[in-house]
Image 1: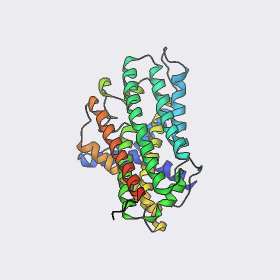
Image 2: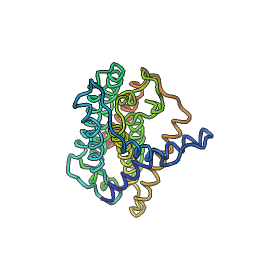
Image 3: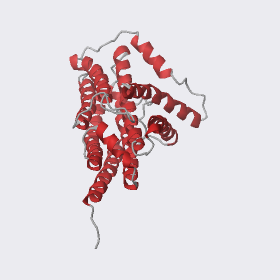
Image 4: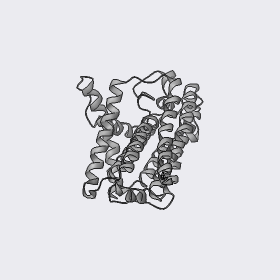
Length: 304
């Protein structure tokens, strides 16, 4: 229960951290830290308007998007606290839940019959096809390092803190941070602040959503970011020898991830649309490198 509460806190705080970091580095006063929560509260109080061409899939997608993100959060442990649900192979269920959220958001965009939203859905499907192997490279690397296929067992077994383990976990954490930029539509992959349909990916898919449904999508995006940021922090924190400080370290690392994302959005522009696939493949190559590195280490080759 403590793990899921921490993830929910991270989910609602990371957007505020990113906004404040971006404002400070740009020399602006910026909006309030909790402004995104006030906006969602306002959306939840209003009714929803549906287009004449939108069907039942369009109406179902926001609920599935939010529910899949929340379900994925139930499998993430936190320091010495196990996940609410854990069993061997839960990493596969986690990856499937992340893919399910993306799949229904794509279906909802296609259900509108809009050419713009169809374009965004096509880009999202391409990124999803490139991102899914990255998840399994990460999980496969952790499984080889620990011998388990459950997040709770993996994090408990990473406590050795050998130099090889620290290097690999730092690389995996960096890959997960890059995945946050892809999965949550952040710069340099996408710009959540843009209003040009031809350059949007995530935002163009939700153009027809309004009020209550739009609030569900925003909350689903926060949850996805919180889950991945907590996962990255947990991978690093699980290698430290002092387990009494793990919870505090994960809290600090999660905040630093938000600051890093905000700093990147302040100093870097959005990629050209045709460069995004290359950026995702580069992230996949880093995950593959970590996987091969652990595999070579596991062979325990010695030179006579």
